[in-house]
Image 1 (cartoon, rainbow, N blue to C red):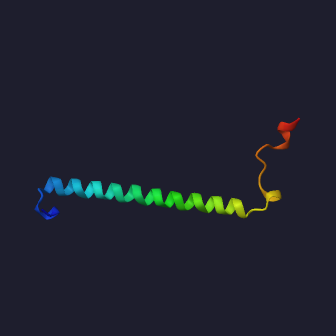
Image 2: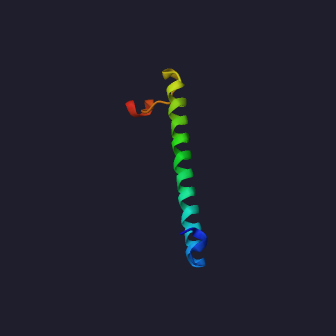
Image 3: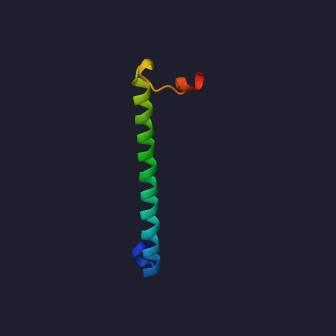
Amino acid sequence: MTIGELPLAAQIGVAIVTAFVWFAGTCFVYGIYLGAREVIAYMRTPRHLRASRFPEKFHE
């Protein structure tokens, strides 16, 4: 059975589910890409130029 043999409502449902899965998968992969890019940028930054996790005002 192909999608074309399904009733119209089922074809619309399949299209909606497919679009949602495609969108979610694309967002997930793009999120991994952005996260990896941030990690690589952080690792390439010399330690003395990185933002301090504990600014000096907390060491009073």
